[in-house]
Picture 1 (cartoon, helix red, strand yellow):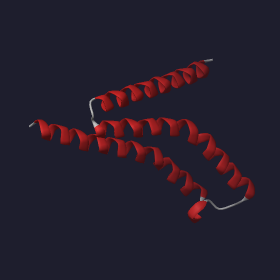
Picture 2 (picture 1 turned 120 degrees about the vertical axis):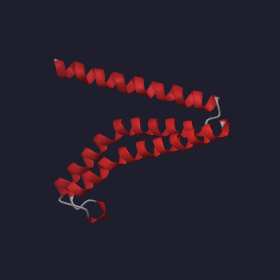
Picture 3 (picture 1 turned 45 degrees about the horizontal axis):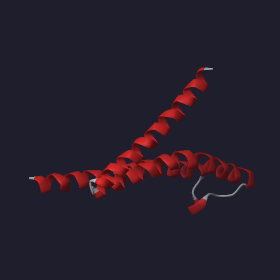
Picture 4 (picture 1 turned 90 degrees about the vertical axis):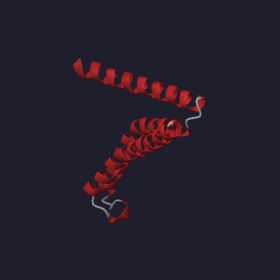
Amino acid sequence: MVSIVIGIAGIMISILMFILFIIGLWISKIHSFKHGVYFFLLLIIHEVYSFIAPPLIQKYIDMLMIENKIPIMGMTLGEFVAFLSYIPKIIVLIAFICLIFGLRRFWNLKV
């Protein structure tokens, strides 16, 4: 029972975050804050990736295990999973780097 409530709450929070990212994207576009637009676009991509990637990755890993194949680039299965775990972190890192450069440029223009 508790796990169902936690699952539903997690989905609701993800939906709320997605809506807030779209609002932030819209406001950044209205105020012509290009780096803010990139920031929110990358965060939206991160949210979509977090919904789409896990089932696809699970199916790919299951296929690798069933057919006894080697993952791409000759990695072991553990290395491949570790590599895939860095993708969302890299997306968020790039988003915040865009925001930092944009805010720095914005503040330098005001001074």
